[in-house]
Amino acid sequence: MRKKKTLAAAALAVAAALSLAACSSDSGSSEGPPVTDVSAEAKTKAATVLDTPFTKPDLVLTDTHGKKYDLIKQTKGKPVLIYFGYTHCPDICPLTMGNLAVAKKALPKADQDKVQIVFVTTDPERDTPAALGTWLKSMDPSFVGLTGDFSTIQAGARQIGIGIDPPKKEKDGTVTSMHGAQVIAFSPKTDKGYLLYGDDASVDDYTKDLPKIIKGENP
Image (cartoon, rainbow, N blue to C red; front, top):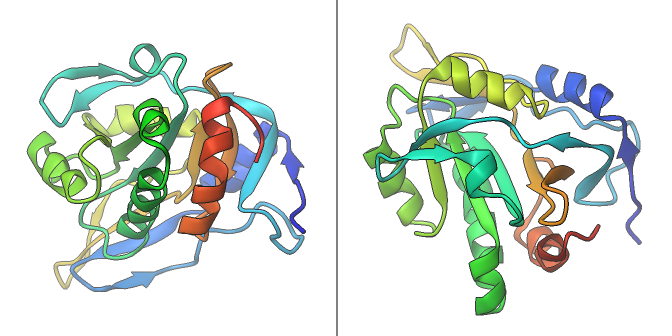
């Protein structure tokens, strides 16, 4: 049925950093190449299982309530899924977060309270705490939204192989943000990022995998 794929984290980081999704706000369309798969094989499993898990990024940012949020300290021992994107994205970002929201709601209440889904903006100039809060609340009020200095966010993303470019304003007024569209899942047992999902992961994929992620198991 589905087959495991393992990759060295170093190789994955290179692939992820070079594979950026282009999201053009206000244009209603996606430009540029899609996220490149990290394997030449046909994709038969939603999650790529890393043989060398990522260390959780050392990020201290601002949450949607305007308070300091230390990612390592405040998610310690929890099943965590992290995604980097921005609220003006017309396609990939809302689809990914919407899929996660639907999958999370399918869990038993006790498990819903355990899993933590974190959205880190790649466009902090426009994504203020208030803007992030409003956007995420429409999907799931429990989602954590983080913003802050762009260079800090970019450096944190690179720690888990996610490439981010500064948002670019085009001549027609649209804003394009190039960012890796991967979701990284961290184990509550080790606090390591051991699963990677591409932008093609569906609601069904997350619905099937979340119960095992909560236990720190491989899907």
